Length: 254
Image (tube, rainbow, N blue to C red):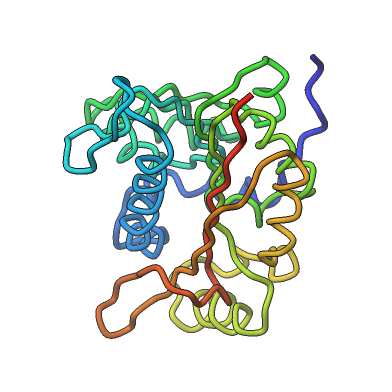
């Protein structure tokens, strides 16, 4: 199969490729993502445990050290690996891709130093799909708002989900509130991320994301907002999806 046209936004790619070791600096330009990471990990872990039976056919146990053992997980747009490593520690067999060789080099070096086994590849989702690869779980976390063609990208992601598998996405809603908080607030006032990190017009409304995923044969069974608490400095899930939100979708068994 020939690869589809790439949906990589080269301008956005260049911004993230320049981060280098800042990916792992919890006080640097990725600080907000590091603070959000526990919420993302808990959401992914709990939804996978709920969906997939254990190897013996019974229930997976969230209290066990490696509750995601036996699951093949693809992390698209993995950057420096700050989501891939925790999931690998939970037992997932991780394949993590990013179109930037620089990002992959940072991620692979950090994983090696941490003693975590992850299959890192400098490639695109479209090229990986063309190779025939499929996975129990496909992740597109904080990636959808950085591609050139959302529908084409989501189609590629969904085609790599095995029968009975899952697809997850996290992105930003296109609302006035998200412009105020994610662009003006995060980039210009609080300076959580570099100016120009996001383009508001590329944010994706939940119904747009849902429709694109379900057009590819999956069913979105959970949506949740993710909100920042300025009193605690932490993030939590919420019914408020006006800014950040995540979805979990299932593909029916064959």
